[in-house]
Image (cartoon, rainbow, N blue to C red; front, top):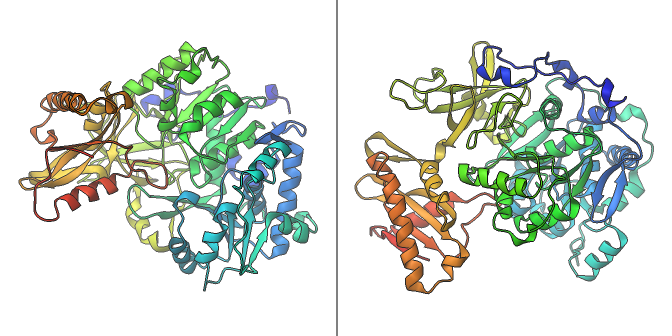
Length: 612
């Protein structure tokens, strides 16, 4: 079907919302997404057999080759014994085999569960496998030894090892193997449950008859993603095919100028909904997808300039690598058509600066910050510039077509109005969301959370995001903080950490910062600012560096004095190394809180300023 004959439909869940006028005025055809994820790309009107679908380290795989690989893998999985509703635990990196597996398992009705390879330990794997009864694991080759330890004395039947090198171009593969990075299946006592991807396909592919395909089933769990990491224990989140498909359909309604001749850079590792969103979107629209196995913000600029991909799903920490980066001096960035980011906060200043850098180098679009979690399959709102509305820096934007959000009072659970109150302050409350991408629910040990998570409001079922924010008078969402990141001081005083972090982020001297709770002998807890100065300041002689630190403190306290008195930070740590990160690549504020508690464990007060 030619692109001119394709009709994109759109709409909103609540037609009285102010943001309605910002989006196209069509009907939202909910039935469009009522199919399996496999069927959605199989029937895509953008499918071009000979078009490049994947590029993995120099090896280009066409759309017809990818389709054949998916069918081959589906038959192999089926002949291996995997059936409808079996869970295959995926500990994978971005490889072509991972993409084939996503759709092959979906075709036969199996459930793929995605976990971050960087966060896996043998103990955690053993715990998950024992609790869930999982029988099949797919893992990236470097983690084979760890998986072998984790599955001892469990009911695991097969462990499929995905190679990192097999799908690379010949020259890249030779360099990879000669570098000694390749790790083999554990020896000297090989576990008979292990098999390589090659042996899976060679020994089990058999027939690929259509009778192994499981048709769409409303409400059936299709994908399990993991959430948590920075905010508490990891939780398993169930998504249906409808959830998975809807975000791709919604994204296509936004003015992002997506074409099937475009390319997409897959930067996010495949254990989060945002990553699977990006892959499904690019596969549906027939875009060429660059798969990068190594997930490192230090490589972002090099990778962007090398691939010259048109569309990006990423996080602010990657985009900040554009700031003061000599590698883009003189570079032409006019190939960029959309940059979509979320997952962590970005200051107004950095958001604006990144857009200015892109424009300076020929890019004609602005970045699209968004809001969302794994509980909503990827992005839920988007701050996108339209013909009628300019981008507003700092906002999380408007809900995607078909989505809706409300702000509820934290105590009364009553819906808060838009805009400011009679005192000129925005009404901050709990963010609840509703829409076709919202999760089916938590599973496993966290099922009990569902009773508290879902709430019926005006005949619709909304999910509590665990975040706080407000809606301005245009209906745009402004994220404030995670509820667990509120520093609760004596007398009911609440400090929003992000407010203080935004002050620090606006300082020229500061590279990274995080504000967390620390023990306070008077008010139980106090804000403690953990700061990494920019390298040029860290490398100054000690006395000069301390003068810079004193200047930062002075400016911080000058701004804090304009807020409530209880916002004044009580302690500062100036670090010599970057802030600690979780396995999901986010600032590990819990580790910083624990550090503060340990320093006060003997009853002593936390020093006002310390250098570490």
